Amino acid sequence: MSDVLADTSVWMRRGSDDVAVQLAEALESDRVVMTTVIELELLRAARSADALGGLAREYGILRRIPLSTAIEARAVEVLGKLAWRGYHRGPSPVDLMAAAAAEDAGAELWHCDRHFELIADVTGQPMRRLGA
Image (cartoon, rainbow, N blue to C red; front, top):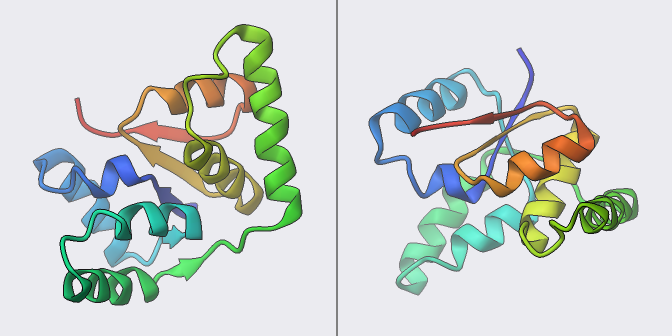
């Protein structure tokens, strides 16, 4: 089984039974990886400095996909390809960077966000939509 990069949309829906079960199974089997852009987006949602610290410790134990200039360039390239289809205003910069990081690492990207389906149409990379 491949590694999994869970998008912010997955982490924020882990209260949903279906999403929670799948994410918990991937975490228990040490398949979940993290990248800085997703971590920052998640930490931004913390309600206090203490909560942020706790979340940072939680995410800090995950294996990392380091960002590189190649990943940055791929995100820009994919945005350009989306523009030719008229979809460049859909996926956020975080979505594009996360997808490029997952693609670079050979990880499956899990999401609950239709914008990733637009990205997958361009890249052909493995992605899975969780939840309804």
